Amino acid sequence: MPGFFKTLFIMKQATALVLSGGAARGLAHIGVIEELEKQGFEIKSIAGNSMGAFIAAMYAMDKLQEYKEWILTLDKKEVFSLIDFTLSSQGLIKGDRVFNKMKSFFPDKNIEDLKIPYIAVAADITNMKEVVFTKGSIYDAVRASVAIPTIFTPAKKGNIVLVDGGVVNPIPLNRVKRTEGDILIASYVNANIPYDKPMINKEDEKRKNSVYKQKIKEFKNKLNEILPKNNKTKLNYFTLLNKSTGLLTHSLSIMNIEKYNPEILISISRHSAGTFDFFKAEELIEAGKLAVKESINNYKNKLVWKNQLH
Image (cartoon, rainbow, N blue to C red; front, side):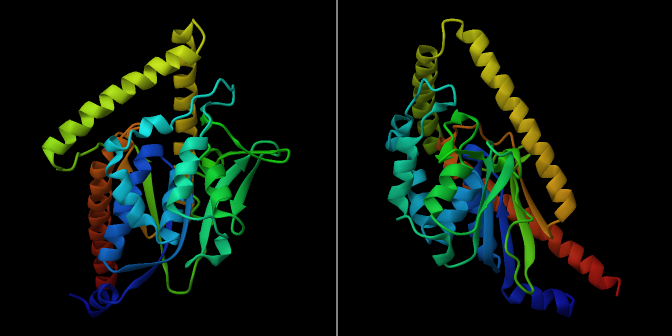
């Protein structure tokens, strides 16, 4: 093994980590972070959008393990009771219950007081521009960044209306703070690649699926109650809008990845979970770990190849 290669992976490698949005798929970021640290990468700064901004906040506040323990018992906590439906035309879910629960994991504090530099992005649809949170309330930053259009109601600050940053910068590689000697790593959970489901406890998976299917049935029944009588057309409208938004954010993500060219790109399939599939936490966390292992192997091989050329 070349001396350069050996030295690099014995020492901790400083890392600037960027986490994409992706709703429930963002839980894979937990496994990504755990595996990166296990492999000797030291996260010196972190940035994220939407669910990526939330997981990044958990990490920056040393609350990731606590959140992981809770999310792994999701089916036992009646989490669908946290969904507060609204008749608002701005989104199907008001979000107050979810965000109040979020507050229970960490007391609000200023971003500038966190252990490492933290960045979250949102979109100001009033003034049609990206908003980058680098200071002030971390709760406000996350609340704005996760406001998925048509799903969660927007966050408002005076006359400014803020929504999920995915519509302007879904994987903010250009916003994360860089430090001397670091490498840029991106975790992208919306990759258009096949999904190889990781092996997990089958009995536990069957139990969670059973509970989940019942909750989804209740969820759909509630949708039928709050939408107009011609709900078939209305649901198709929401599906079309969500798929269009998904295509937009994916295209922007690919452009950002190609432009800023992270040293390591960790890709998790967009087919790994749906928007509300938080019951798949164990599977998604494991998928994140496996994706890191594959990406690091590719990175190591590339380094060896480059080193052999000199």
